[in-house]
Length: 282
Ligand code: AMP
Image (tube, rainbow, N blue to C red; front, side):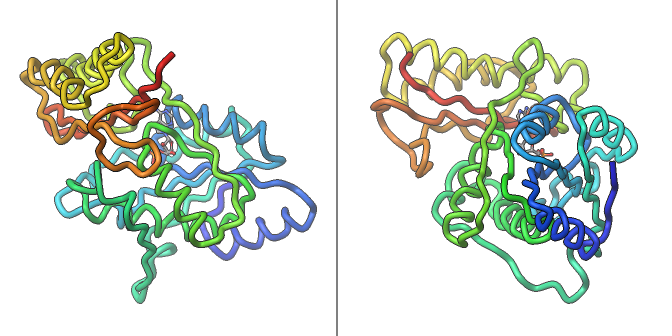
């Protein structure tokens, strides 16, 4: 397994690999790898001839006062995990390598970034699409794999790829959860034992809404109210948003016809966690 830190070197490796007729599968991450990341990598191994992952805590997707400095980092531990899955290259550039002092170009996807996390994190998706567009030009993959844990991010990347004609297949993978249902996240590392227990209110509220939906409730206001009750009963939790949206446009909807996205962001103490569920009749 190679670790590459320079953009030029990564591009040269990718160019050579493509010229030899190989398919490059790519999994971008911010590191501190867990089983959710590893599931994407395993899919990448299946779909590509070679697998590249990136590990880069991208400063442009963190807002002022967010956790860029505290975000957990463990490159040595990540290398061991990646090696086990059979990753061929880890691209791990420095911030200066990705954003030299004269950097001035940003990529912005409009409508689908405006709801949900776009409300409380107004500069977040601009940072995500900028870094992912750069990574696509550096790693030159034919296939890139993203998690549905960050559902709005996946929709945003799909839109960017379509709008900017990136010749890359985007693959979405289901949310990987801990045994008790908590969606895996590098940020779970911030939680105290008490908060870790409290964090179950996210998945519990989705389960409750799903149950009501499967029993025939299609009014989103009602489903959201029931989800709110579960989260508000948890003293350590504070709701950022709970919404039910069209699964592609991400616009709020009043009633569910056939399929909808239920998404939520909740603070557990100082840690902001997200989770989501596609509500679809069995
Ligand atoms: P991150 O390192 O948090 O930026 O995540 C890198 C990639 O892993 C993104 O495509 C995420 O959606 C995906 N991911 C993170 N957590 C999970 C999870 N629990 N299940 C599936 N994919 C995940």
